[in-house]
Length: 376
Image 1 (cartoon, one colour):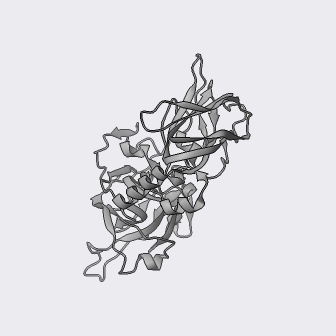
Image 2 (cartoon, helix red, strand yellow):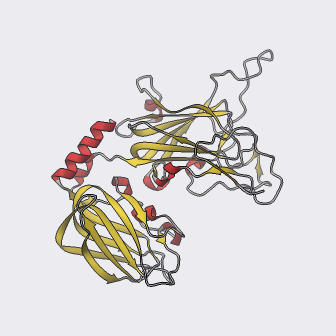
Image 3 (cartoon, rainbow, N blue to C red):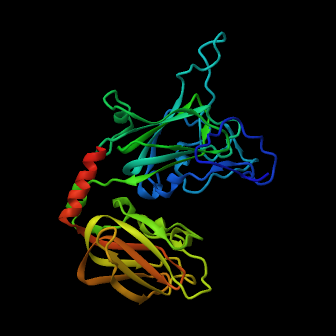
């Protein structure tokens, strides 16, 4: 059986068929959700974490944020039962023999700290391999709390949660996607499963909304970094890996943690377009080819523009790159920009792009205005 691909408005419900052998993803139900073009705010690489859960009897809450898709081993059992690659709670029971069923209000929950605060555009509740033991329904709530609150503080009566996804039926062994239309900044989510069951993965796609005062105190910082609000808007080729990898935190740790294109058989070249956190003054550039050894880009150039429709100006001319190497360049003159572009020749990949600089007065005003719009 082939995987089912349905429209983004589809809602998966009901059990999946019991596993019958072979590829466990063959009957997995999924759809192409447009909001997945946004960064995953619940990415562990950004610092996201599942800080608490009321129950994780069968499978640990931390599995929710594992970046790779869930695995399934039909022979893997432990002392508590089948070991699943996800978050799974025990079966709820009623109060008595006369009322053995859970109440309508009974549910399990997990608290998720987003890796970067932002506006959520969509949520994926993935029940991969949970075929008959997935929750009947799910709901998602959000809140914006400054600092580093403890689970107890988040659960206090003083904290008011906002509903992002109302209680909605979901299906087993499926990617259940939900559009979110709230123009509001969140730092934490509460994922609820009604009444119990298992969820394999959680993805929270949205736009990072940084704290402009923090960036101002830093002075010089990476103005294209995902964690600071930069975005990879478009790329010529995404055959092997996403362009967003190039602005993830830290150094690449393996080859697929960067951006690599297919091999070209023409005289063209590949590129990525970026939107900076806000209008900035760029003073230095890093282009890293870590772990790209026989497939790194041969040459690269960097251009910038000021405003959406401004002309591109080359600030780093076409420069030879070495494999598995971090290259640093100081610009002779600072470049003021809102967007940047890296061109690689003729193909291959880079692992990271860093544009070091600071916000202009206009950029700071823009970020402060954005923060007022979405709260937090």
